[in-house]
Length: 160
Image (cartoon, rainbow, N blue to C red):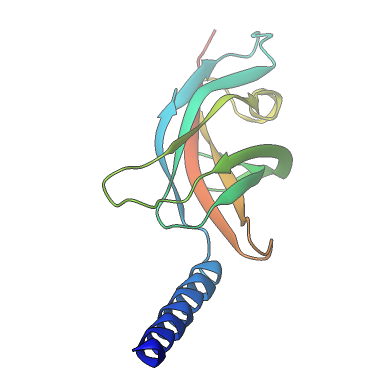
């Protein structure tokens, strides 16, 4: 009986170690579930330096804990041509991995600034621009695996 219990304990330990090594090999998988606001209105004489994204929600899609490392801005004109960027900004937030398929932890990042000067200097009145925001997450285990999540932020240049 003791031999059977020892053999069973070794088998359980082997399975647990194998499961743990597989979960540390996973890459982060994060999704944006909420952004407010999704756009901004400005004009040539406006002195507001930044559009403010009040709140962005991030949710992990797998069990990997990860960290938000940085955000990269790219500015596009309405015909999808890049006219400014990429510019990066360091950020930090921890996104807890999903351990229960029916329960999820939401990571909220508040007050993200989007510089408006590149748009005011380039886009004529009455036109629109889009800012592509890349959020780069790095895994907690090894610091080698990345996930990039992107979202568009619109800006309208109103005529005076």
